[in-house]
Length: 215
Image 1: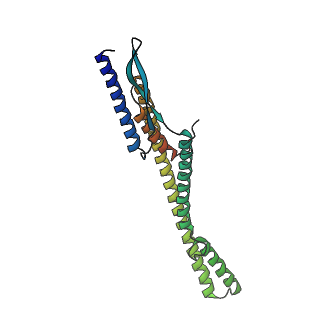
Image 2: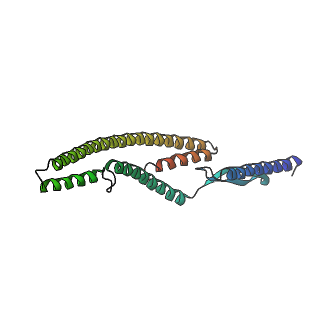
Image 3: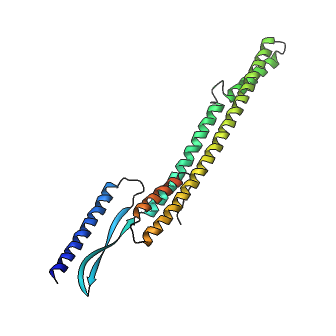
């Protein structure tokens, strides 16, 4: 082998070692980066005229655990749904109040019933009749207030659904664009792993809106 050939072989090895160091460095620095998939450098022996001609970098493989990712996405969807339900149920509880609160809806109903019983035993008692009227007015006011607050909650829920649908459509469009960019990059022989990371992040964000299951 000529000196130039030996130098070329050595240079290819140095280039491969440098690329491998870059990949290892990227894996370490992005270990906690959301959506990042571990990279592995793919090498192949080169030959020229039947003789060894060094080493060639043939690509970079991105590794992910699809089962773990799928399980996490389902968990994210369940958590997101539970959080939304908890939020609206808590707001409903504020509307109706706690059962042991005399100013809650159930407390006002119980108060009216008690006043009615007292008034029935002494229908000639004006104070007791006034107490019934006062309790009925309080209950009516609470019912009207509760109705308004429930309508406000419903409007808020409808607006949130509309916002999430728009958000979902936007993310789906982004994923479609990324899929196209990935195909172009791979078709041209370029590294598309960074785009794959972005696609995983986009899909992960969708799993917080709707349940996703990879098939």
